[in-house]
Length: 153
Image 1 (cartoon, rainbow, N blue to C red):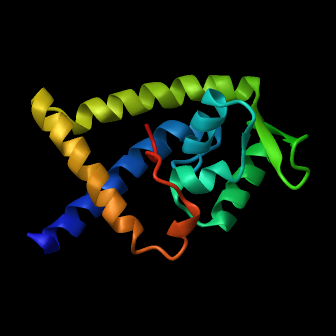
Image 2 (image 1 turned 90 degrees about the vertical axis):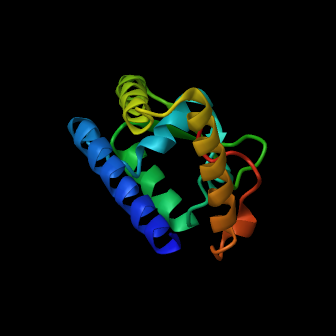
C-alpha cells in the first residue's frame, strides 16, 4: 500500500497542475503562481515572508514568483513602513480578474476530485490529507521557517 500512496499522490498532483495550467495559461500564469494571487487578493498588504509559513516552499521560489507577478502587473510592492527590510504586497485590477477565474477553477477541481465521496468521506479525506501534509513537513530542510497554519484553504 505505501508504495502506491506516493504513486497516487504524484499522479493526482500532476493532473491537478495540468488542469490549473490549462485554465491559467490565458492569464499568463501557471499552477505555481496562482496561490500567491489568492493570498494577496484575500490579504492586501501581506508581506512576502508570510508565504514561507503559508506554503512551506523555499524562499528563492517565493522571491522568483513575486518578481514575476509584479513584473506582469498582478501585484504592487510597497515598502513596509514598520519594517523597511520588508515589502507589503497589494492586488491590482489584474489580480481581481485572475482571482475570479482561479476561484472558479479551484471550485470545479475540488468538486471533481471529491465526486463519489460522501460528506463524511470528504471530511475524513481532507483531515487525513492534512495530517499527511504535516508529517511530510518534517522531511523538508526549511520547515522550521513555517508555522502550524493551514497551508491553503
